[in-house]
Length: 414
Image (cartoon, rainbow, N blue to C red; front, top):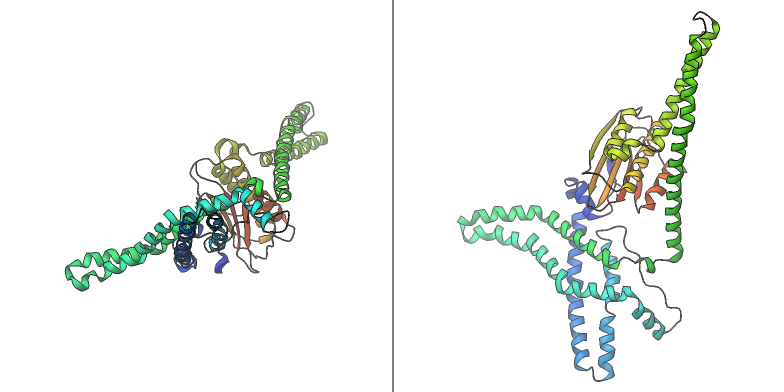
């Protein structure tokens, strides 16, 4: 976390998209540079070794040595992928789980049999070949465009004073280097994550079952909430409306100056308050504006009814998938409820962006701080709801404030 309550981004791409100016003063451009430089060095060494092993293996394929070398070349993707997973943490703090399972038996033969049967082994080999034949060259080109070309352009007026426009171009390219390096590093890391991430059949069965169970529970909860909303709307609410009408008719038969007329009037007032509370509850259980008009309109309605002034800055292009909108809506309302209960704030900011295939929502307040997501408050349930969609929630709330609740939900474009 950074000073002033700023939340630390989890990826270089995300940091550049969310904080394009403050990004320059962060460590992310340097991490992206290190990621690409280490990739060039590792790729050069891997390329030399792989070409040598394959060449010698082909030349000696008629003997056992050649077969062993070709087998070793096929398995070179394993250490290459392990290094890639380590390097990925430079631009993606979450990293990737190792998809390989330990062999059921001990010994080299069992290890080879297990690895050769795993689809992850062959994906890693494909990634290594793609890296050596394409990605490595792009790494070199991007680094050259960021440093070598600007240096040549800036030095051009030394030999030819009339070449000063090239110096201006060189300075502009050098100033853009943090963005070009990070953009390519983020794209490269995304490709590596797609290839290296474990598939469903490679995930720990227990962990997979827990995730699926949590998703089923959330679906059941949503269905039950819709049922309760329908029962309240069609049952209790209609009965209360009928009762209000009956009380109104009773007042017509009772003298206006009688105590009974006053008591019926008081009962009508209490009934009207109960109806208002019930309608508010029904609207919160299954907000119609969310289903009809989307997340932005629903959050605008919530902000208009909130007890503390809310400054909205929502830039979301179009409708999002229904599970994402639902999770985001209830996450924000829960965060705002915590502000109203505990923060003693007099100003709240709600910021929403859709960057790099991630929906990012920030709830900031100028209250007393001290919020703790691990203390069993509503923030815990909020984090669980986001986790079902592989989302994350992080809280920055030093004593004395301010408080920032950052929520991220994967939400690919299109």
